[in-house]
Length: 279
Image (cartoon, rainbow, N blue to C red; front, side, top):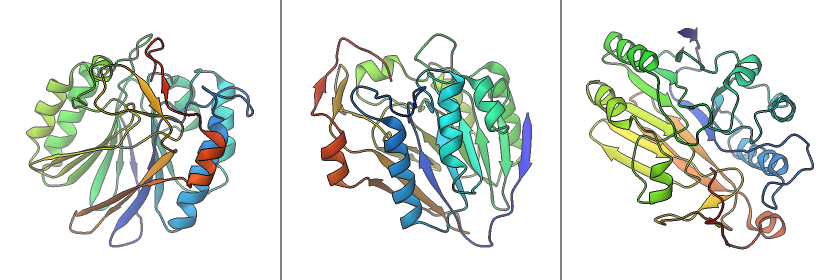
């Protein structure tokens, strides 16, 4: 289990949550008609122009579509322009080993913990080799439980690719977090506030129950139609989520979509893709 200490500016902490970039091995390649490198660059450019004083960037998986080193080289060439701390978790299309080589705090067989002054950021790997669904290993669940037990009154942010909730879309729920019941049992025992940040579902979800809040963020490439039994990609633009955590642990958040002009130029019309299940 890896731990780091971070000391951002006193008071509130803010960051941008980005997910599901699906980068390919060549900068000019397109994924279902969309250049995912270009869309990520546009999302980062707009996000950091709007919020230039954030403390870090958080990426919750499917950084790569191919699991190949070339896609992570493209990712590195993009993020190194911004000189910000970067935290990542792997998604079902990622190579945890290659991602960890690039971002050492990225989790693989153990969780990673970034300790801030008023909260901790826990990075969890939910990838299952050869599968699109997710599952947290018993070892990582035990480490998470131990961390929460030792920090009972501290706020915790958990970053994990597969969200621990049902989406009301059968095909997505079939590819969701398989042991979400065990995960939520551990989280719900924690007396402190917990924020879970995820990707995978390519749409915006905001769920709250008691001291637990779960947020998913749309992709930087294609979005999925909500409440649908099969996969439909929509022409909703790429997006990112801004999050500000106040000193009193209030969560302020907003999802931003890139400008419509860029969307009309780069994104195809709604596509029925029920023959191709991947996310």
